[in-house]
Image 1 (cartoon, protein in one colour):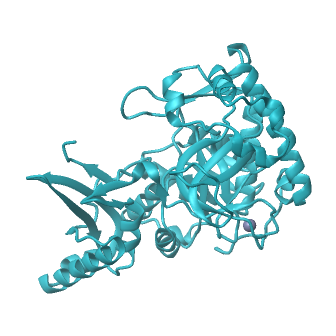
Image 2 (cartoon, rainbow, N blue to C red; image 1 turned 180 degrees about the horizontal axis):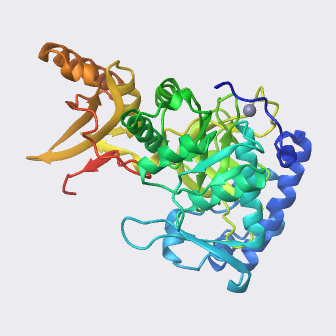
Image 3 (tube, rainbow, N blue to C red; image 1 turned 180 degrees about the vertical axis):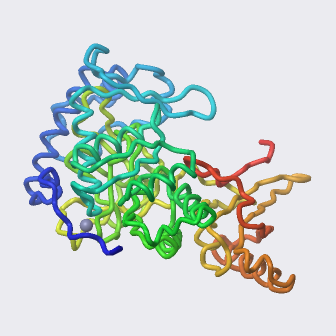
Length: 441
Ligand SMILES: [Zn+2]
């Protein structure tokens, strides 16, 4: 069975991906003016903030004017829980989703019929961008339910004309059986769950490399380039990065094309800016900062200048695929995931990259933060291959030191490294739990 990506068949719905820039910019401006007006007229919080700045929707004359408008933040969704930011009456709202919310109230998002069509459209274009098409058999292992992942991918796959298997998350044995028996060609899930499937496949006597599976649409958690290389090498598939967040639409805000050089933002519906997190000022294309998104087509819950807390940079140069949509550099760093240890800011993805530099270390790890006598401790537990584990104590110690050095040279801190046997670290069926913070705040 060939593992080469099939010749890309562009779905007609992908046409906006290739709009000439002047056309795209004028479409964006038209939609921006409409959405700002809608939010101003229907969302009290937004109107108050505009009034406080003595701004009206008429002040948006060009795309640059967007930078004069107030930001929206996650706390706005919490403060107005559950329906305070809705711009449509409930009779026009046909779907609600909510974040799981580990503490306190979740955030609630709403869709009109038209919003669902937009979401379906961008998800379909996402799947088409990585070379999927009619005839593909897509195993959708994102969770179905209040989480946006499952249904988002589902409707996009159906609209594409592919065959979708709504298996949802969990039940790994059944996932592998279906993958093999149904001739699955693409899978949607978190990258960590796919790693778990690879792991289990060996135990179940399924060789993923020999199956028709050729693409993975991986998202819902940050992952690194090193992780992509591991996944591709171990499974023989192409691993693509999809980006999205419920506050904006769900998955399908941005997606990698087959060039795998950053995710194209579906700019006709989501307008991106990058700002300096501290000053709130926009930075130039190519510079790193926080991603801010404005929904250009949202009816039920327009988001103007929503601060995503994701750190990235915009790539404005034209992609080899021909899409005119700007790309975002891979998001390895979510401001929300950052932890501070001994005064140093650390992102889990930095540790992931450091670990995966070392041969023998497996992409399963967990970071444990503890505090003893006022001193913070960072422990990294990482699984190692059975070969290393079965080797001499000396070899194990050598590997431990290598991992230690790799982490130290990446984050500038010494961590306590604990090598553990394969399958010691608890697997997750959705987003992986990378950091356990046991410090008493
Ligand atoms: Zn491209």
